[in-house]
Image (cartoon, rainbow, N blue to C red; front, side):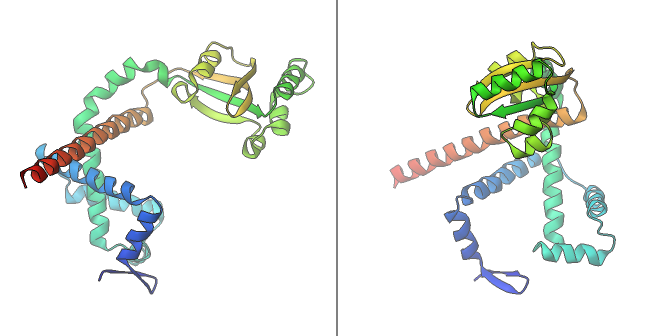
Length: 257
């Protein structure tokens, strides 16, 4: 019987499996296991490897981030996470192998994908107010237009969401593709500093203020986002193909029996 020791308390592995199953998490874990199997197989087919030096560099970087200055600190952290040094090394190897495979499969396609979907990567620095009632939204809009109150003051007073009130309606840098298409078409045809009249969504009635338009640029962060998206879509297709073929083989075997 396999047991897990959590700070002196023993837990049967079957209990962990049961918990994951009852809480709808087992499927996700199984998918991740199959994803790693696919990654390992395709990486091997492409002769991709991870060196000991690369693992060491990644481990050193992690230790600096976590301020694990001594070997004893690292061992204590690993024990607290229920990992052995071998588990940790294997995890690092698999993450680096995943990165190499993603780059090998789609690295050359990122620029083309960015160029074809450039509009989606337009950004705005956005503020918004959300209130539950249309009459209140228009009242706030007219107060701002008549300079009885600033947009930021109104956001701090009236915003439906407490966190948004605290930040005076600041939403940060927002990609076009994240927004509702109807809202994005209005926002990206507006002017900087213009208060946009109330727009209705399922959340309520929105007032928007655009502080800045940011032209799309293939930054390292956006490049990684595109690469991750392409790779994850590929993984999903590969998993579906694997499951479909497994089902076909099972049906064929059952028929032959």
